Structures are given as C-alpha cells and as structure tokens.
Image (cartoon, rainbow, N blue to C red; front, side):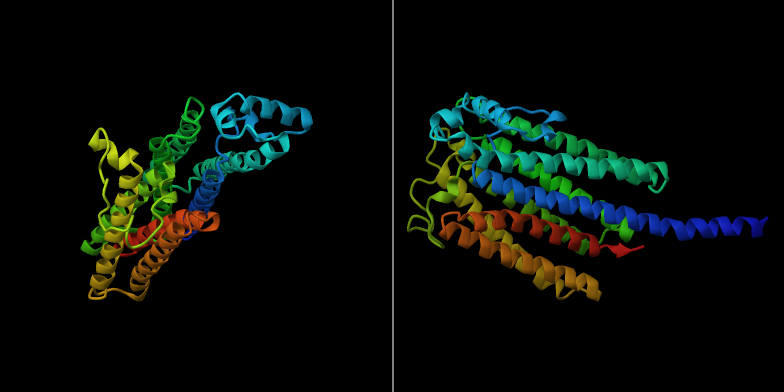
Length: 351
C-alpha cells in the first residue's frame, strides 16, 4: 500500500511548487499591469484628457472610432459638457482626437487587466492549482478590480456636471484603491513564490512604514486633484516661509486639508518629509537587525526608492509639474509602495 501511495505523493509534492510559481508569475504580471495603469492614469490626468469620453460602456467601449462619422459623434457628445464649453471650445475634431486616445487607452488597459486576471484565474481554479485560502483572496482581488472600474467612472462623472474637473476626493479614492490592489497582488504573489507565516517585529515596522507611505501618497492625490502643485513652486520654503501665512484659513477650517490649495500642498510637503525621515530611521535600525542578504537588500531598496521619490517630488514642484516629471513622481510613489511591501514580506520568518 505504501509503495503505491508514494508516487502519487511525490507527484503532488513536485507539482505544487511549480503551480505556485506559475500563480506567482501571473500575479506579478498583473501587478506590473496595475503599475502601468497608474502611469497611464497620471498621463491622462496631467494632459487633462480624462473627461474626453463622456459615456461608460464597459463592453462596447473597447471599439475605437472607425471613421469620421464616429469621430464627429464623439466630438458632439463631448461638446455638450462643461470642459468643452468652459475650457476647450476652441478644439476642432482633430484637436479632440489628441485627448481622446489617452483616455481610450487608459480604459482599454483597465479592461485588459481584468481579462489577464480572470482567464488565468479560471484556469488555475480548474486545474486545482490554488489552495482554498488563496482562492478567496483572489476572488476578493477580482471584486476590488470591478470596484475600481466603477470608481473610475464615478470619478469621471464628477467632472461632467458643473465644474470641468474631477473631484479631488474621488480622484484620491481611485488612486488609493489602485495602491490597495497593487499591494495585495504583490503580497499574494510573494506568498505563492515563498510561503512565510511568522510575522516578526521587523516586518511589523515595515508594514507601519508602508501605511505612512500610502497615507502620504493619498495626500498627493489631493494635490493632484486641486492642481495645487502649480503654485508655491519653491523649496524648502513655501511662499518665502517655513509656515506660510494663510495656512488653514478656510471656511470651514476642517476642510482646509482637502480643499484649500495652500494647506493641501503644505500637508503633502510635511508628510513627505516625515515619511523620508521614517524611512531613514527604518533603514538605520534595519542595519542592526540580524538579517540575511536578501532581507538586507530589501531594506536598501526601500531607501533607494524613497531617495528617488523625494528627488522627483522636489524637481516636479520646482518645474511647475513638468509633464514627464509629474508622471514619474506618480510612478515613483508606486515604486516606493512596492519596495516597502516587498521588504515587509521578506522580513517575515520563512516557513
């Protein structure tokens, strides 16, 4: 009996690591696509292309305009909304095409992420390559992806009413949900690639740092949503002062961190400084921990990503949000989030 059972057990033990590796590669690929999605989203926002498509058609929206009649129809629909009437009335159909394509690619890429996630997911389920706990995590990720699509349209709707710009609250929520999905994809992928179960004190510190980094990134969402990076373009002083006059002068005052341009930018500056200091503290303390080479390398990556992001943030401000730097700064936030997520996982004890 033992001789007949052992080959089957051997097959399972050999097949499962490979299956887990395949799942990990798939999830890392999805995370990379989410990263690209954030970059495309940054481009769309900074070029003010996000309101060029005024309808949400989840299925038929994958078909681009095929002829001049299609373009004319889309242009006429766009012309009925505030952005065209108040800002872009000068646009011809040819001008409209330049902003349409970025938003079209942005939406198309989102749909592609859904396909790249769902089809392999069904395949792995059919092959029984995913354990029960991971299966529920992945269903949760699938639901989050759907909610992200709804959030994207909910954000666009806010710019189709009176103000020809999307709500900074909805923009930040859209960006924040993208970060949550990105972190979750990386975490589940790492669990498949290298299962670890014991949370250590050093891992907890990395997770706390990750929370601060995400919070700082979300404050940047309010800066982006209000275009607050186009004012007070000096550093380290702001309007010639460390604490500028007019800070929190808003009615009501409690909305100043979300709606007052000066306060929103000041908050983001100081949260960024605090985050960088905490990254330095984390890295310095990690130098005293008993870490293996891979773990130590992970902590170095966090420091490097933070240095890059601070540099990008300052130069983006000084250049009054030059397009390439603005996009790079948004991408840098995701890189820092990813590096810290990786470090938090690697600092756990291996099983």
